[in-house]
Length: 463
Image (cartoon, rainbow, N blue to C red; front, side):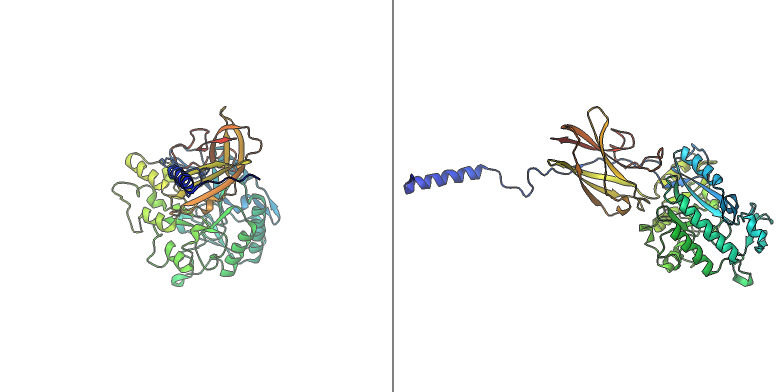
């Protein structure tokens, strides 16, 4: 063993030299050098149309106003041809035509539509179903109001709802199914024949209403459902609402408006988990976006407040498509349509790498009034220098959880196996399950800049 010794003055000199070297080194950082910083993504104007939100027309080919969905009604007797027989061709024709235009559908079945032939299946009439003629709403005896508490009708509706859910729940062509079936237009009322002021009440009993509500809730797990009126009976069920007198009898006050009923039912926060939509009151469609607003008659006539309070995602507003708005009214209508639903923006991104994976983190916010209605797969892709997708990852991220005004942070470790070493551009999309459906576009400047339908997140390197 060899021993070295050093005298005290020499030791002090060494210590001083080491201290000088240490002082020259950079101070330790709380963030390791291998941890990258967040990089901000530039914002941009939200697109004029995005999936499952905005104004929508009755089914048809229109280029007069941007949209992503189309609406239609069908009579029950168009598809239910016997107690246990169904001919789905009329529904298929509508869904296929709408899907061919790259749109999702929203629809409702009815038994009684004032001014149209009855939608009651013939076999029920043959079984002796009681019906009532009426002249209200310009009907002049064309349609009839059935006895909704008839046991044969109740059983037939059970079978229809179960068959509809079995065939169409989760169908990518379908955005929303409104319960319909009961009441005028399938809107769950028979006013003025509702028992008020000495009138006879033609509507379904509460027991029959509950039976229809529960049948739909059991038949559909994926496709979003909507019922006309909020109530204690449907509060806990997995379905949203449609306000078909939007901006006319929406705001609270008289006790029977849409938001009055939401408050009474305790469902004012249900928009966070179930979509709210409806129809802009037909009398308001052609005037509410004029300057000045010149709609006659009573009613709320306050579109922005109605959007804010209901958190509505979409509205049937056929006027926007035919005859259509012009000039300043078009601009206000477009702003109104864009105020509905979600508005998603990725504010920052952070990437890193480990030996076998890429680390990705996003900061995302929703500047709209409602969350996105579905958890479409959020996918990340790596684009090589040749401009082609080298690999796609489907994350576990959920868009439905990105609430308005509550920024979220999403993180994932993306397996890099199979990716060659080199530089890649990462892109993001929410994959529309409709093959040729409209892409969901983020309110970012780099949307569609690398690959159409994808948001460019930035470059990364695989080692």
